[in-house]
Amino acid sequence: MTLLIVVLVVGLLVIGWVIAKYNSLIKLRNQTINGWKQIDVQLKRRHDLIPNLVNVVKGQMEFERETLERVIQARNNALTAQGVADAADKETMLTAALTKLFALVENYPTLRSNENVKQLQEELTSTENKLSFARQFYNDIATTFNTAQQTFPANMIVSMFRFQPAELFEISVTAEREVPSVDLSLKKSS
Amino acid sequence: MSSGRNIYEQQTYNKRLTLLVMALFVFFLAVLGWGFDLYFSGGLSDDGWIPIGTLAAVTIGFGSSLWSLHRGAKAVLQSSGALPLDPSNPQHKQLLNIVEEMKIASGLPMPQVYVIPDDDPNAFATGKDPDHSAIAVTQGLLDSLSRDELQAVLAHEMSHIRNYDVRLMTVVAALVGAVVLLADWARRAMFYGNRGNTRRSRNGKGGNQLAILLLALWLLAMVLAPILSRLMAMAVSRRREYLADASAAELTRNPMALASALRKLEHATAPTASIKHGTAHLCIVDPLGRRLNVKEGFVAELFGTHPPIEKRIMALQAMAYQRQHATTSA
Image (cartoon, chains in turn blue, purple):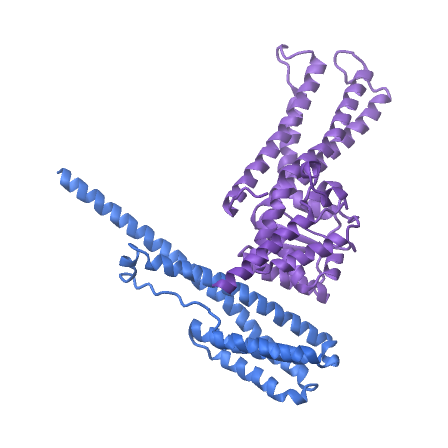
């Protein structure tokens, strides 16, 4: 009799723990999805703004056709991104192309003082900032979610409910390196 | 400086302190009302006697406490002449963009944003909680700071909102305003009483005594209002500023931007005309241009609303150094 009660109590405790753990994992997963959505909003905004910017500066920047094409190319590439890691890679390329374009715009006084260009530049800068803050937020919550899945004893129920670890939105090292070299060479001439 | 509280402890601490401030305010009014009752009835032993003064005072106390919590932010914004943003103005659009950036970085709901048409650079946040909050900056701030510096200042204000500093500060500001209002009423009533309206005094002691009582009340409130605001500000502001500076650096990951913003604000020490005495403790730098806040030492520590800017800049530089050190060694 006593044994039965002990077994029952232990069994109930275990079930209670599984339910609590499952719910907390679901909560974390939803937060991670929500964090990704915030990134996605900013990416869409960026993709919408870039054609506008290119159209405005196109007439003045005939000589920089290559840079403009690279921006368009990078933007179109980014549209086709599949999954978090792929998006992170392609968006980083886009950031590099954009940075170069912004640096070039500084060489054109008529563009620099153009209200339209200024506004688009502000919008893109802000989107870029929002993107980086949203990325920090997403990576933090995704790391928490992954850690919660991997720690013992939660890792025993993770496979049972088919939880997947979240991919981090990381900036690849190669793309990061490209940016400063462009920046330095151009700042001197302006 | 900081006593090592984390954000959640700071939030709880601020909520408790706000309650305490409101309770003290009610208590202070109750004592005044009780004194009034004692004076006019000669004691509490009378049968069937209703302590009308105490009841009225407590009602007013509760009323103004609740008002300060729910409507205080609006009153503070109104008294500083804050105007809503003009979406066609590129400067205002940029401000809105930066606030949105900080909203994402902090994970808080979007506060309302206002601009104060004043050339002196300053900023403050107010509100009941993160869901009902507002940030106001002066036109001078928009004109004199770079984008990064503006971002740092807004991150600082956002941290005040997150820490619930705004709730405490707003309630204090509104209650100090209420005490000033009370003093004003007492003064009017006093002059009214002087004109010879003696019917109200119950035991026939005459209008002179009523006038003396009102004079005492008025003097008390007049003396109390600035002391109250000073003591509150002293208890609440200095540590909070350091904490908000640190959280701002954490949000933007750029401590030097805030340091250079503070440096610019320090050099513009002209008083911010639109910001009243009672709301000084809400601002990022002291709007009254008091020299006290530039100084260090015991008296300044006791009565200044803000820590010396030099000290704040030093703390931020230390953070920047640690940051650099951490990234290079990693």
